[in-house]
Image 1 (spheres, rainbow over the protein chains, first blue to last red):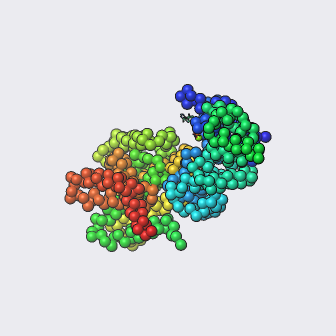
Image 2: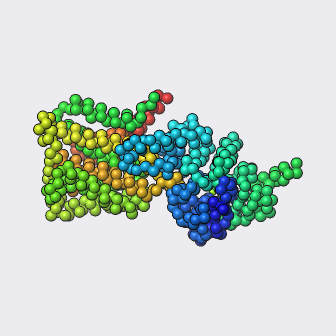
Image 3: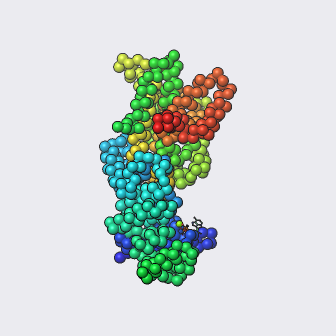
Length: 266
Length: 318
Ligand SMILES: Nc1ncnc2c1ncn2[C@@H]1O[C@H](COP(=O)(O)OP(=O)(O)OP(=O)(O)O)[C@@H](O)[C@H]1O
Ligand SMILES: [Mg+2]
């Protein structure tokens, strides 16, 4: 059975359909990518799935249950977590505190215990801190742990968002352009990280413009253009689809597909 | 080894409170000290609301008014001991904050500022107009807390000024301890997270509405207790305690000192409480000067006085 099922979702802003009748499914542990030109509606789709926008049409199913219109924190409780294309970092907090904040749902602490600094509250904070340090190590940010988040580079902040999202121990993780603005080395890191996360059993829904990355790690690809799904399938099938090539004409998808063709030839 | 910021803040606070009286030229200064601590208490509550959670309130003097009038009225009309009147006031403030906070905290930025401002004005109008209970704008006398008498019976004789100095220092110390505990707790992290990015906080599972409400209620209790102490120290209270100017004063103290840190905000309370006393000779220019100081701080030291000063020192070390 699929973990996440998107059924005919759509939304319009001021009469303009940003996403229209999009359907697809994600199975447990699978990496599914959503690709499409700028303004295709990828982020808007993510916002509907993660409860930030209420879809104007269609349903979002998680584990066979209708979760359409559920608040983001309720979806987080059900194991859905995400990162943001335009970074949403807790700027005034330390890197470690950012990663610790991701543990909120696992802490289950009472305000009174926290005010009084009761042993139970301090114990939770210690456990959270240990887990957050492990996550920072996993994304290669151990040395930055005690710095203020706003002092980090763009690529580092992208990885910090992933660490924070992983703290929820999600069953499905939505990554909106995790490699954007990252150099080749950082992209390699993120590539490895995503593969690791998926290998550990977390399903991943990925939006990414780096086509090499997408083609390499995705099991399944959904292509959006002007809010509409124009193609869907495994990387080989999608990269040869004439509609996809047309939508991407002159951009790196076409290049990637040519490269792939060349690889196949050679 | 790094000392925890909590330990440092509490030690500094305790040390200053203990040492300051050695330099008091007269008994009058105990009262100013007490006033600083009492204002510091309300401002510490605002650190939780504004500094941690990032939510503004321009109506918190209303809760100070509730705390103050509970101490004036409950002993007379309900026969409550004054100490329990403080608790009653805090409970009423918490209840009101909880009921009103639900709809109000959905608002953001300016809208929240205006809504809380309205709440404060409403409370001060009730205190002014219900004159059969509150005696209206002329004010009302407040019964003695009674603790000083108890101490005297135990052989510890203090002047009223001395008593309120030490007592309000103790209450502020407890208030600061609670606020500092909160800072590095799960709840405190969630509050600071929603301050940083509400949408990201929600996606990590923070129930933003519930947490904002918690911060609002807690800060209302701080303001209420502060109002109770002020009324009992002065043995008299007027509706001005709930007025708009008092609300603004609280916020300015917090922001001036540095609303992100408990110690900074208390520092702000100290400056804005002491300065008008020092400036009485320039009485006519007092408000003008305060305004100028505030504008300069906002332009040049936006994080507030204490954090900016500390940063400058650290910058030199590196
Ligand atoms: N809140 C909003 N209000 C109005 N229009 C919106 C809103 N959010 C998105 N849109 C519009 O919806 C369309 C899709 O935007 P979206 O951000 O989802 O694209 P995208 O595929 O993520 O693009 P990119 O690759 O540049 O990130 C755009 O035309 C955008 O202007
Ligand atoms: Mg986008």
